[in-house]
Length: 60
Length: 235
Image 1 (spheres, chains in turn orange, green):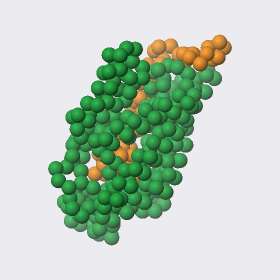
Image 2: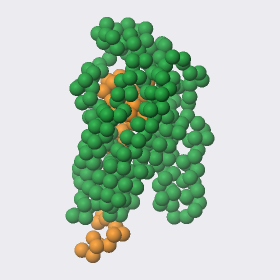
Image 3: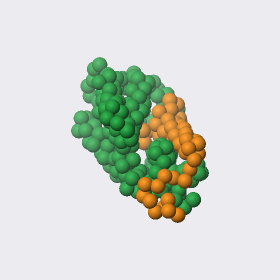
Image 4: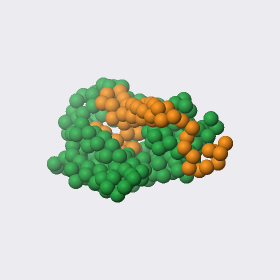
């Protein structure tokens, strides 16, 4: 209880849990951003075309 | 634990992606459509009757026969889906940073993470590779993608070192990481093609796409901070 009152409280996680969650989120996030923004397939490119341009991914 | 982070990221991506789709439809996408009229007049006339005349001139070398969403509802739907998936992906990267940091967060903290994401993924890379409309002169795609990815990684790492570095040497190293990609320089075409996209259109696109992306990143960061903070505290 005391932990939640402290604004600088560390999250209730062990070091290993934190690293595992960080890696999982980072890998999945990179996979999604790569697929939408950079993947070099015509179908992926055409589906995501306007979004890629709007977010200034290198395109064409 | 991991499930909560995923849920928070998907929720933040869904909301911010849906919001930015509306903003893009109003301000950004019309400029892309307008630019396409200059890009490949032959290709826009008939989708079914495809001949390979346009690619050599514009450097837009996609197979004309490849699937593409139909203009109208289908294309808007795919752009919206793109924004939502991209939002979830960016939110996961923000969430990864927050989790590694290991402190409770809220929407205010999230705003700072979102602003940093905007710097690393949009604004700093734009210094070398400004947002581009279809049909603009550009260097080889792979070279630009590599420079973009390296710049994003160096900028994110540099910002993290400045924000979380425990001494001044680390902070100066962070600043160096921000600057180095721009000393190396992005690949650029050696000559500009005449008669391409009008400069007014291109300038307007740079401004509107960056402002839209900035608002998106701030919203995404605030939402991610809010969802992650609550999710972890209630455990």
